[in-house]
Amino acid sequence: MSTQLVDGTYDPAFSPMVEAMEKWLSQDEEYGGAISMVHEGKTVVDLWGGYKDKERTQKWQKETVVCMMSVAKGFGSLCVLALADRGLLDLDKPVAKYWPAFGKNGKDKVLVRHVLSHLAGIPFLDHAPEKAGMDIEAIFKAMEDQEPVWTPGVTPGYHTFLHGYFCAALVQKITNKAIAQFWREDVAGPFEADFYFNCPEDLWERASHLFIDDDDPMVDWSQDLENPIGRSWQHFPARIPQINTAPEWRNWGIPSIGFGNARGVARLAGALANGGTAFGHTLVSSDMVDGITQVQWDDIDATLGVPMRHGLGFIMSNDVFPMTGGPRAFGTIGHGGAMAVADPDLNIGFGFSPNHASSAMGENPHLANLLKAALDCL
Image (cartoon, rainbow, N blue to C red; front, side, top):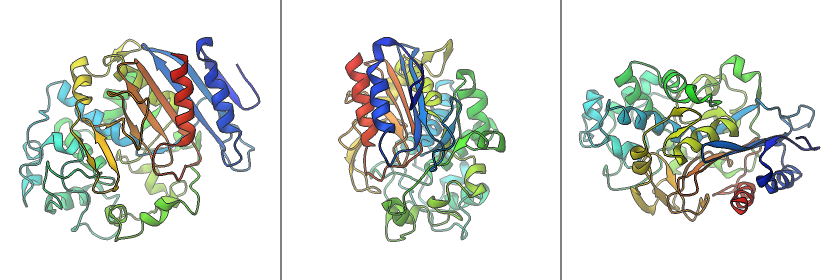
């Protein structure tokens, strides 16, 4: 199937999603992107379209990837959950059991469960060297030296910078692998999921830029040390507007940001929605999926200042990010609107990878329209 704006394949029962995608990409401020949906373990929609560049000269292709920002955080959590599912880690043990040097300065009671639920109470670093944000060993050392900012297990707050590092440290301590390697070899690889925690040269050749507007409030927040987000990212050598130009971003390999496309994340979300299994492989057990959907907290996020609802490793549907609206729907979200959503009750996994970052605080409005079209087809 191909139209002027949209290419790809879809089950005829989901044809309204083509029209919804064309409506999205026909907006003057939009450039290109992709959507994909897995229902009952099978891909029913796989669409892409528009352009990779602002000049609209390079068409978005089937294999195009883009920076999906913090979508990586949920998949960093999934690496840790996979280790727990395989009996290599206990979610209710202290992080210090696996990373002994972390347990000092009041952090001995921080549990792995707290880390996955953004309840560790360590969103900021006071002891990291200047501009050391991408120096993995330096940040690990600073995390060891840090005292909790909030009482662990009590105050929920998005660990916008350090969540990826927590996941990376646990995976490295247990498997002796860098998390980007573990992700590709042991989690995403069997599913042929086109999503990565880094962007090497061969992947960068097929990447679209992520276009972030100059007036996007996140640009200012990330540089304002009075703002919790700016305080979290203060040690970074490259700022958010440089996401497409700084090699530090592309080579980092920590799941605080990631690169991929809608198809890649939908395959994983579809497996999670289908009891942990799809495409002939098991991601995690059905018991672990049930664990993910257990609400860990429902409160004001101390970092973001908005009401949120969090499961184990993933955000649950809430007023700010409704997703499908289902009580057990969960997902992982990137600044600008990229998202992977799993709804076990509807048995759908949905992926959305735009290359123009929405500045809305909350769910990308185009994503909301696309999800509505999807739900209307069920």
